[in-house]
Amino acid sequence: MATKASVEKKSKRTGYSVVIVPQYEGRARQFKVSRLVLYSVITAFLLLVSGFAYVVAENAHLKNTVAQYNGMGLDQVVRLQATQLDAANEAIARSNTELAALKKYVEYLGTLDAKVRKTLGVGSSTKSLASILKSTSTPTLSVSRGLAAGAAQLAASTAQVQAEAQEAEKNLIILQDAASKYNTMLARTPSIWPLYGLITSTYGWRINPFGGIGSEFHDGVDIAAPYGTAIRATADGKVEQAGWNGSYGISVTLYHRDGIETLYGHMSRTIVSAGQTVKKGQVIGYEGATGRATGAHCHYQVMINGTAVNPMTYLN
Image 1 (cartoon, rainbow, N blue to C red):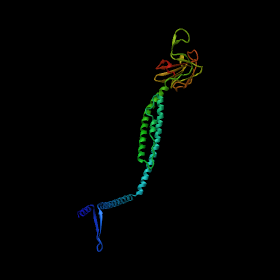
Image 2: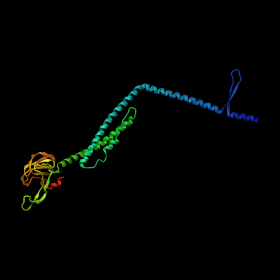
Image 3: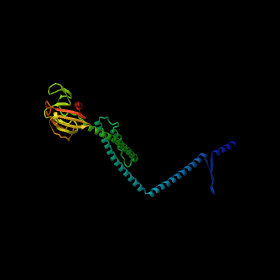
Image 4: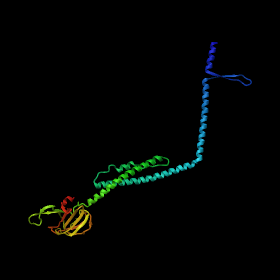
């Protein structure tokens, strides 16, 4: 009896009995169900109910979303977005054209920068414009890709090139002004030979070429060449005197700049007249032996504020 009671007590702890009794006639039936099975069935039932409720809620949300878009006119929204993307693509293409033109402008500035610096004999630019162009790529954009990123990249690239171009242009304005003044000064400074030949008398004291005793101061250089050789202006200037000039015979005097003058003496004839403007290298007359001369040559003289100086310092 003790053993049977113990078994029954243990059975009560581990499960439940389900008794099915007919309503009118028949034999009652009894089933034993363990706790594990019972809990599993309950859990499965709860999960089923929860899943069903989630599906119902999502279905209701989807219906609300569809209804909302239907109310707004979904096809119109799509068409509007497509139109906006097309407009954005056109704006990007237009901006790319402007960026390409800006790059050409920067390339031109780079070329001009190099020419001006070469003329002035200064160093190269501290930052190469070629490197600016290399680092500034032209962005592209399609309707389906990267609208915001492409537009931002384009704006940044354009701004970078514009800033570099403006800085280069500012520097070039200064350099161009300096180069213009430098070239004008160089053109109006005696620096070439009036003619090529043999120097028969240098600047300074010399023995009197006409004989006699004593010496005389020669205020220029004498350059001998075949009679009639063309004589050229050694710098840009204005004709102050052209014609007979005492012991210099037929001569031309040019005024250049800052008190600098040049004189070309003993010509056979001149082809310029007083008041005329001449350019460096321009023919102004021809060699002869007029005036106080012992033979055909050109007396070349440089004066600063009326005082003769050694012409050799001005001859290349």
